[in-house]
Structure formats: C-alpha cells, structure tokens
Length: 249
Image (cartoon, rainbow, N blue to C red):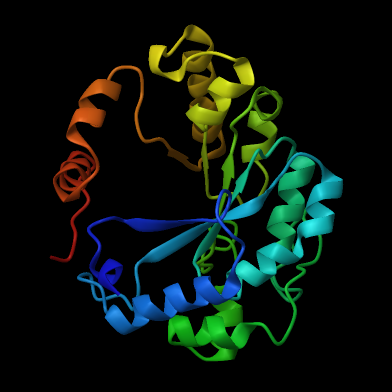
C-alpha cells in the first residue's frame, strides 16, 4: 500500500528472478488500489512486470505466451521481456499482449488474450470490462492503448538484432541490460569496457531510430555519481526538470 504514494514514474515488478506467483501479484496490485490514489490523482502507479521467461527463440515464446496473458490479467500496465533475441520473438510477445478484436497490424498476428481474464484487471483499473478491453492494447501502436511492451536487449545474441527487434510495432521501450550484457561478453561491468559502451550506444540508437523510449539507469559518464546519489525523489525531480516534465504536484 505504501508504494501507492511512490515518487517514481513507475514500479518494476520483477518475476525474472522471483517466483511466478499470480496470487502475490494480484495482491500487490490490489494493495496499490487500496493505498491510492497516487499524488498525481491516478488510481495506481504504473506497474511494469518483468516476465519470468527469456525470449531466446520462437519455440520458447509459443510455449509460454500464456504467461503474458496471466500477468496482464493481474492489472499491471506493461510487460518487459528479458533476452529478446529476435524480431520474431518480439512479434509473438506483442501478439500475446493483444485481444483478437484489436486493430489489425501488418506483421502482427491476431491477439491471443481471451475472454474471462479481463474482470480482475478491469477492477484494478477502475473501468468496465468492455472499456478495459479497449484500453488494454500496446502503446504507441495503438494511440489509445495503455499497455507498455518493453524489451531487454541484454546479450550479444539480442544485440545482433537490436534494430529489427525494437522496430516491431507494439514495442514501447527497450533497455540494454548492462548486467547480463557484461556476462554475455565475459567482462567486468564496473570497468565499463568498450564492448559495453558500444552495446549501449547501439541499443540507444536503435530506440531513437524506432521512436521508442530507451530505459537506462546509468552510463559510463555518471555511473559513480549515480551510485553515490542513489535512486530517490530528489534524483527523479532533477530528471523531470531537465526534460521539462511538469508534474501535477
């Protein structure tokens, strides 16, 4: 409930390295409703859930696409896929996050979310079942959609397809995953070797070209300062001032 009043722009609910427990996730989302509204007047903060599967190939995605439906059915506002290695994988991810009646998009198959799972999510969002189904579509693919689909381009295999993957319709943001990227190249992240600098730059340029957001917590120039500073409301406020974002408080 306390997180309903968070200073952050959004909350990451990480299931990549934590149990895949839908009861716990639904309880968390209900707690945000109970502790709300937010300082900005919204029903809950935005919540993006990191999926417990890795997008290493199409077979894995088809075998686990149901997880996307389960997670979105908890009322979260977005999903983030680890190790998104190919655009084919990403297309399945986007398809899994859509309803069959969503506006048709070239290159993206018919949505896979089914009827019966929208009720809880609609209650978390504070809308009718019908309105939820209209809103629960990836943005910016659907300008009226309120679902965020994100990618972790976080190993050398995913990096090879970064430009094509982030350009798949329905992707809203991507990150370069410095921890996993350093493991993939067997280098020390703290030393920020050139291979990591280049990896970050490539993903960043790919997101710029695709017109989607780039998620990054720190870079080679400010890593020490950001570790010393740490995340918190003061850092968030400075970032908002720098980008001229006027908050409602």
